[in-house]
Length: 100
Image (tube, rainbow, N blue to C red; front, side):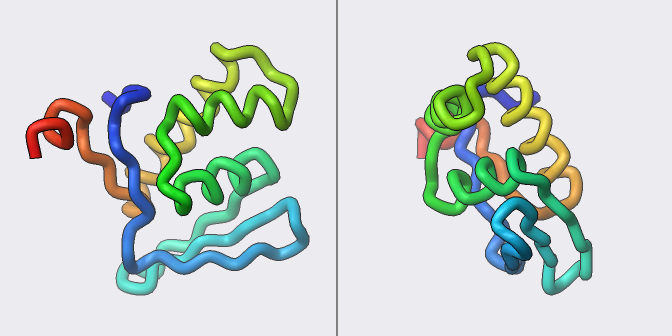
């Protein structure tokens, strides 16, 4: 289960292209998985690329889209689970990353 303390990184074989400022497409160069993100997903993706924590991403989502904390955190975690399932991000559980 993904939590807010996990380290989430963009998979090194993934490239992205922003189409019109509100949509981004992702392509995993090895698996050929193609994934499209809406404006909220694009915002989350940019934060992930910059190494932001899930907590920070959630906070910025609250500020940018005027949503409450629970909704922002749920949206961030749901997208991360989906991206991880597609092999587009790599998650390191907090307990492992803290000991390494």
